[in-house]
Length: 160
Image (cartoon, rainbow, N blue to C red; front, top):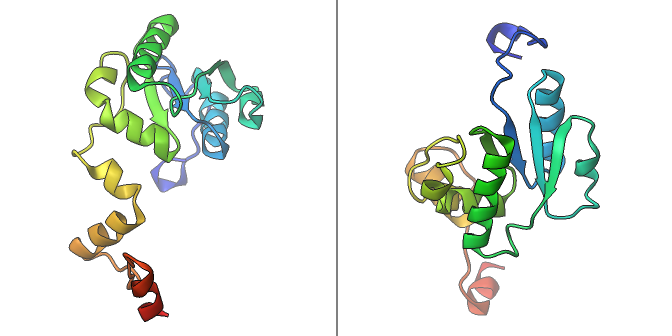
């Protein structure tokens, strides 16, 4: 849907830019369904070939690579080769903490082959940490439950 509740239909959107989804569990599967129904070419990068998310009929093609286990250099090279194989500069969508942090940490190198939003330095890491997220909310006046971060056993005993 777009603003105003208008439903997008196949043929109403630009389908010329493919999308690559990293670590597509439930979130990635939803992305594949939503964009695939519109005719947008969707490619999945799965860590496990047995992943249920790899079974969607909306994937143009599935690839198997574990960013969390490979070295950053290997993963960057592999992703850039994938971009060249697809034949254009696709949109890159990471869907879990590991892949989001990887893209944020290596954005400069990955920009060569992919489209994705620029993020302020450190934002992704702050959002993936419950502690940093709490302090970010407080700093920006966003309501958040009062939270303690015990540093040792004595802190835990004192809190209980």
